[in-house]
Image (cartoon, rainbow, N blue to C red; front, side, top):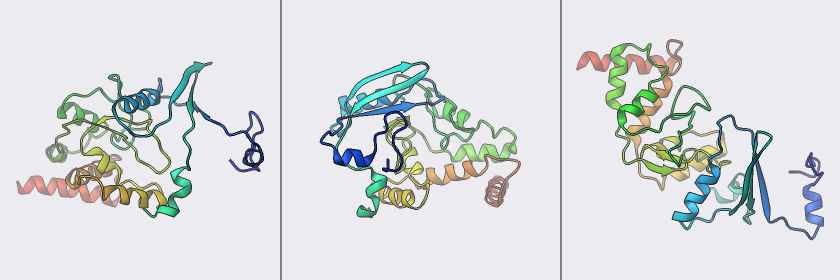
Length: 235
């Protein structure tokens, strides 16, 4: 927060912070998500119990007037989005939320899922009007999802772990190919160097995503559809 943009609630500014002896040890997160219950506390506590990853300690979380608040201890350091240039480098049987993995919109719950067929049924939602041969061929190309892996789900440069959950084993690598701006693209290119490669799965998802607007396809979507139908004829 810049000095010219004071907090609307308390008028606190970065300039006042630097001129004060007080150092905040807590951070308040306020969510207006339409997803229902916030899963971030569950994700943080899950990691706290099972890993040694440095994470903030949740001191309080509650609802007030239909708004969700979470109070955590503040971890010293800078935001990755602020220091990136220096480096150059759903638990509890809750549904998954991923507008990238599932092409039918943001904020839509999916699952819990327990098989590849159930996963495909969710992925294919909205694609029912595709030619049957193309849809069948796309299903044949979907890699196995097991073992389901607890992972971040959206490792953007500005994100923490709200989208975490058990996803297909290939999803984190696939999602790390989605760059939201130049800095995020560079960050994810670095991440992929340290991830097991699931390039076949990524190619499957890229084609699936290109078909999400059928029948109003762009040039890439038209090329994908033509290839799927051509593969079917050859077989």
